[in-house]
Amino acid sequence: MAGWAEEVRLPETGAVVRLTPEHKLIIGLIEEGARVMDLGCGEGDLLLALKVLKKVRAEGIELSEACIQACVAKGLLSVQHGDLDEGLADYPDKSIDYVISTNTIQVLHRPMVLIREMARVGKRCIVSFPNFAHWPVRSQLFLKGCMPKTEKLPYEWYETLNIHLTTIADFRDFCRKAGLTVLREIPLRTSTSGKSAEVRLLPNLRADTAIFILEEAKPPSG
Amino acid sequence: MEEGSVGIVETKYLTFAKPPNELVLECGRPLGPITLAYETYGELNQAKNNAILIVHALSGDAHAAGYHHPGDKQPGWWDIMIGPGKAFDTRKYFVICSNVIGGCQGSTGPSSINPQTGRPYGLSFPIVTIRDWVNTQKVLIDHLGIEQLLGVAGGSSGGMQVLQWVVSYPDRVRLAIPIATTSKLSAQAIAFNEVGRQAIQSDPNWREGDYYGKMVPRRGLAIARMIGHITYLSERSMHQKFGRKLQDKTAYGYNFLTDFQVESYLRYKGDHFVKRFDANSYLYITKAMDYFDLTQVYGSLEEAFAGVQAKFLVISFSSDWLFPTYQAKEIVSALRRVHAYVIFTEIQTDYGHDAFLLESEQLSSLITNFLSHGWNQKA
Image (cartoon, rainbow over all chains, first blue to last red; front, side):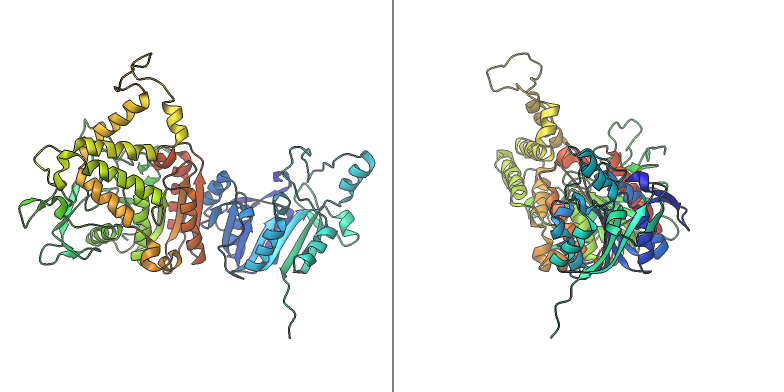
């Protein structure tokens, strides 16, 4: 979704990173000095921003060799070339403060497995995804009877990598089934200029993107 | 960036462990005196914090970069990576490479004279291990006055030495670059080593290793090298390079002379190797590789890495079937469990295990960036 990102110059080094509206919101959610892992970290823009702005210990996993090269060029020294569908078995329980996955879960073969792994490894998880119940998506299917194509979901059905698209309503339900507590939902209306606004009224209809903050549900006490 | 050569270089020698202060090897036997052949490129800075140790693989030597004399056509074995403007940039870093003991290119090995007998050691040379190699390299580093290496880097059995360095001397290495390597050889890799050794030992000229000054077991060593070479290439790269092309002919010869280009290539590689390598050293070095097993010594790979302080750049090659990617992932997985900083990537290539010795934009840019960011970032 390169078109949705805005170039931001970071302090100190003056490095320029491309941040999406979700990235900017997520940066605001993270405490200074946290240990953060970005799953599907791409070229490492979010991680570098977090490292510079929030002094986090930044780790990433990414499928593309070229992206790993770009991360190393940015000075990110803890990035793994790997397939998220293989899971996070190497990480002990609650060893990471925030496990982040932006705009990635819909391409996974087994999103349930990975998100549960995220919640096991991370004290908190931050998951963002395009909302498939956004009204332009609904209207294309309803009025035209066509597979929806939007600025956020620009691919033809036969070439899309998005095999597990979801909606805000479905994701809430999913979290309950996966044993996850939703700490906060941030439904967003984003724009190509990289700006965003939280949608308070009818979020599942009006938000094109959602960020969920999750944690593993605590077993009932007593 | 402009890339250059380190130019004319000279092999230097350090001798230590003179009797009665022999070094006791991992096998329990003493060895001394020990000479290490080594070369250095670039300048050690005042703070002595820009030194990188390059560790070589099976058939490598101390001559990693540059030329030995003005007419020299063959540069050092990793010249593509070491030099001004290259990955190991000698304008910034002081690069050191030494020959392993048990080898035959200037460091003490089975072809060296045993001072007690005045004759070459042959098989009386003690078995050496990767740990022994690293311990002798550490003597060299101490001798050069370097408290902490900026980096240790190497491929294949060089990568094993990198791993041993961070385990044996965790506070002496800041950046570790193990490439195309493993924490222990697979049964298949040991098997190939053993076939190579058997080829040497079944050569009638081998004479239990006591052939110095006589006919050397050149057939055996050449065959060992031919087998090795097959394992260093991928099926695909061999197919692309040779296919079924015939050598200097248009039709089959219907005899046992050379028909195919691949046969000619392997024979050339074998014959060429015999000119520069000692058969006994081949036995000792392959044995050192076979014995290497961090899990066996420390209980588990995690235990082995428990105290590591270095940051890691672990690289594997997609078509390497001798040291496959899953073995690199085992290393990465253990390092992750001990919370080490690790960059891991599998480089897509058809060139097989030997890819680490070949020109590669991906490999050199990874190393360049890792070293420069690793150097700048404290702790």
